[in-house]
Picture 1: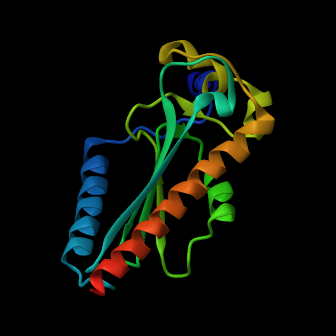
Picture 2 (picture 1 turned 180 degrees about the horizontal axis):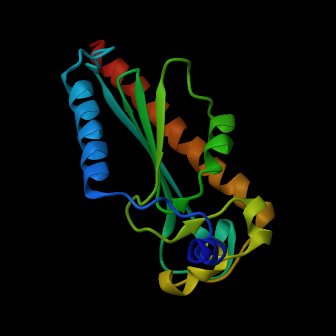
Length: 185
């Protein structure tokens, strides 16, 4: 009992030790649930009739002061039919960016929008302006590993990044209009 108390103090709450039988029961229940989902009838059939993209890029110097590699912040939007769009950036954006992007370009009702990072030539992490004063790995620590040395400008960061996203959506809309003109011929 004393040993358990010391472990709790030293390591915090620990999960109880599971027997092999407990693990087998748990993993079998997860497998059964996944199989049930796979065998079920889909709630909705997704059969898109169109695919359209839009992209934009800006120099890192638009929101970062210091030494940067020869890379840009790139944004790409892929719209698959009317139901799905994927927004990707050439960075690892923090999840807090989603609300900023959705405010600049609100997703239409019924459309699923997914956000992703790691597009093309990644330049590293993309913190929000609110995260910059906190510092840490995602603001400063990663920089040497990606060829950066400097500081994110909290006053320029959000306008530059959301402007890039907005331009990517505008390019997508232009491409959709162009495609609709071509299909009417």
